[in-house]
Image (tube, rainbow, N blue to C red; front, top):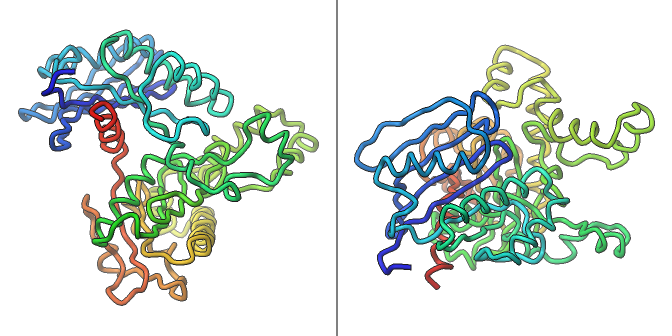
Length: 403
């Protein structure tokens, strides 16, 4: 690696998409970003935004057969901006990998053994890890000389104590099939908990934060001194909070009941709980903006969906207050957490006994900056902290290849 190589390309490969950002790690500047979606369909779409030299956003539609073709298209777009993948300034490629199991607790340079282990974890992340692997293999083929680094969604949560990570089922069965609570969104929880401490002017090692990552997927974490003590997602991202299309916490016997009484197969129940539940299942919409619009028009189903969503959030705030014993801040992040003031207001309302309150004026302010929305007198800070998973992946990748 040349001494001036300071750029990191971050790749987030989904089952039919590739999200990417190119960053200069001398100061964390974004040089370009984009998204390829509907890979493998006739109407694949690429949107690419160069962020240097005032370049305009470019969009293309047309068939992109597979992830290899997608990455080659990305490489072409970057090259058109003088940011090609063949640049000597590119230090590494950082990959978001959803599931790292217990083996991967830190960012890891990818070799054949690492790739094999990521493949072994496919049964516990069947939607995500195969796509992540495809992205890695394609990037390796394009730049075999370059360090490729895996940053795992689960890594931040591997500090959970065993009593928080284990399910109360037969130990031999659990161990044989790797059944335990892994947690997800770890890159976001790590970044936001650290940024929250900075916002408070405190050392992360001396700060306890409840992080609420609320997007279409949603998770909560209890972070003590920079270490995850508990998180709401489990073996899969299905457990925990009510989400856009996922049920979150549910009596496991519901699955047996649906099999026996409704005659549903395991696959049908899987689709029901992961893709047809949550807000979508409750009211037919999984967009919080649309749900709020319907509530304002007096829609009772939308109101009930919102109330169920908030009730679950409150339960986790209370539970994680108990887990941590002392809380310095509750931080809202991700699409809903950063933008939906009514969600933040409703989630904190009534929790004054826990030292929590929201200032209506501060909560109504729209901003991309980390900010406090609690009144000065409140014992526990309430913050809105925009997440930046790509920057976190880039920072971890760059630190590793320069170690």
